[in-house]
Image (cartoon, rainbow, N blue to C red; front, side, top):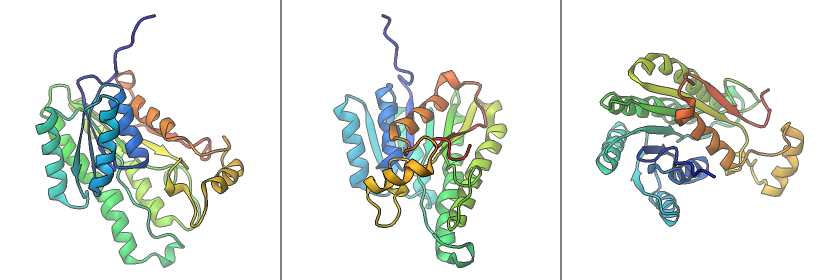
Length: 257
């Protein structure tokens, strides 16, 4: 039996929203495949937990407290990433918020602005800095934006504002892919459906209650595991996906099929 080399050895992966949920799972998955990992987010303690989990398994990681709604934070994030590990080869823009639950006609200006600042402008801002760094690298880099099956692929009531911002991430990713592939910067998105995070729990709902509900709501009969989402992200970012450009990979158990 031949030993497979880690897919991302000697590469640096940046993961925003890396302190919990999908972001943490993605960070751990990259580390297990040999990458140096930088995790970014607003809560230092959560980021420290991710770094600790990576180091327990023998990987290398660093944390940078970052609010992607603040331009100077994003500039500092990319600078610290390259200073720590020498390059930025893979960027996973995962940070996002869920606000403004209710009919579109009742969405407040405050909730709408927070959704725009984080889910849309925050993604654009991080991509802009990541692209600027990748342009300086002979091998370019790859970017994966985490969108959602809600938006471009599926609509449900009372989440219109959130859906709009996630649909924008899908569209922005595909447009950016065409803009920058000639610079050896490959851009795609991954759109998870209901997954094993608190975001898929309804108010007051327990995990066991969610499991029962998902038997009816999802064709596959359950939420996606964090490992399944991470595996999709790693594939899209990997050399095996070199001709995958401007794709929005949906991982939702068939909910939007």
